[in-house]
Length: 432
Image (cartoon, rainbow, N blue to C red; front, side, top):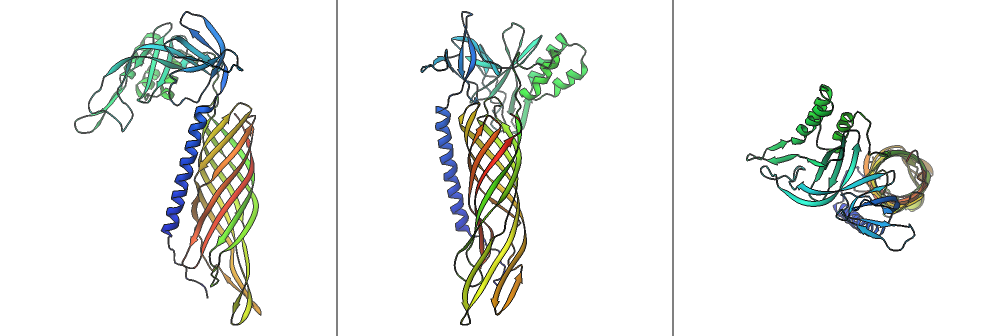
């Protein structure tokens, strides 16, 4: 007797999976927070003291999601104690070949300018502060700077040897809760164009359309400078990299019930898995936080053999199918230990699986062999939540292991197929 193919969702199981995943993500985030606080990443650089002296040594280069309020410095990399410098006590610092910061003391805006957290009405409030500004690009005439804190992102511009001036941008809700933009920075840029590149109508049009973001303003400033810019002698690291890889995919398939045999059956398969994808760096130089998108191809061929009594006879039963899966898996990867030559990372993501099935059949022997083709239909789309850990050697070779808990792709009144997988593999990182 074949069970009817009626889809039914197991709410309790979904809730259990959700709770487990929330616990896993919470645990991972807690571990990453501890790692961020403990991790050091000293690179050669210098600080420029207020008296004009240059102090060479090593700076703890963190993956700053906001502009640093202070830096840790060592004269020798092996020193046990570091020296803390704030923008109040130095003119600036440089991490050799990577980033340059200057200290700025003066007026900064305090209005929020990121939708949807906007003020009601125009907010031109300011405060006096001393902060670090990151040098984005520089050239013959102008230098563009960037600052970010828990309140907002700010952009500054300065003529050669002049004090930086903030590029002003106001966005707010009017009385009808409509969003109003006051892009004063566009006019500020036009003044510099008229001064240093007069009559450049194409550049004027670009400046008028430029959004308040360093990605859009950097090429405008470079063109005013008539240069490809970048931050002086700073090298521009690639913001992404591609990879290809191969893994051994060990999958355990469980079926809670085949025909009228009320027992969990399992089948373990080992098969190759290929993958490729792209990594996007939060900071290309540090490469501690990475957003990964991966495409993988895999297959399994589970087979369930068992004997059961029917009509006073012991009959042999076989249930089998082939599953071919293409998975798209966005992930967040964090290097808990992060150096140029060796990295150890943790990674979580969600896999969007697209599967096709062949050889789907149920066979039983009662003297003769009887075969039922396509006794069950499986979901062509399903998802699971892989957790991964690995190491990267010399920024070129990645060795990893991943685990995905049981995820179901066929739920009927009489059958529930689920996969649990463990992968061991290697990825080849094609550039930095």
